[in-house]
Image (cartoon, rainbow, N blue to C red; front, side, top):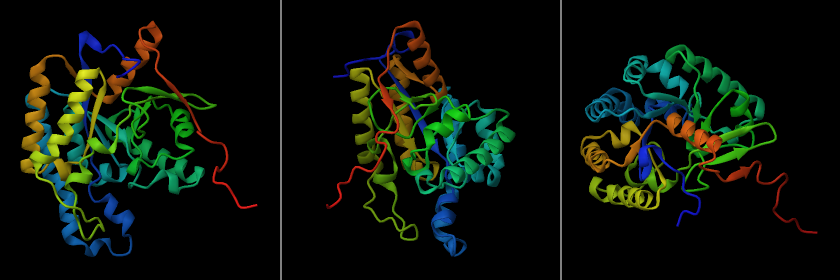
Length: 298
């Protein structure tokens, strides 16, 4: 079913990454700036991520000897430095996820550049290196994002949904590796319910939600694809949900032919394969359109 499969390291059947977006309470303050401080219940739910969820996740990763990727708004890095220090100490990657979870496609080019540069400075100060990967908050990649990422030395993006395997984003300026994902492997739809966040959904049981995540993984495993979980510490870090995640990790590790890696490592592997001729990724030229396409009445 995948017409252009990529060879994964050491004969692995597929590649997988369990990535966490540690948004904490940033999204509350940006979505409800006038009254966020009065939304105590929602804030406690979101702060559960850095204060309870991440330590639990890190302990599990240590037990399974995994190095993974966390996307963290720079404001959250400043607010929760001890949590971020623990992530870095365990060898995990910290990627760019906005400053305070702002949507890039709601910003002017200059404003998007400003918040990106401010965030890069914070990430570099805390981690000792510039971020190599981006995940746009809410997946809201703008028509300027690719150019700005390449301008600032990024290696890859993981915001778009255009394939089952890595591909290349190409602009007039440069190229990026795209490590695609989609809503079917995001933990927000099956789990998040909050009146104060204006998000009301039926909450699935962890077992039922994991059925969907596992089906997506099994397809990637069978077809040689890339599976990326887009999860949140305040969501999947909850006790019963994390228990299901650990069962999934046990299965992946136990198979012996699943490459669980940081996204930076996967992106570098893509470029290595492209350079040695063992894989030629599909190329998407951006922008998709150079002018509005909606017909107007004549």
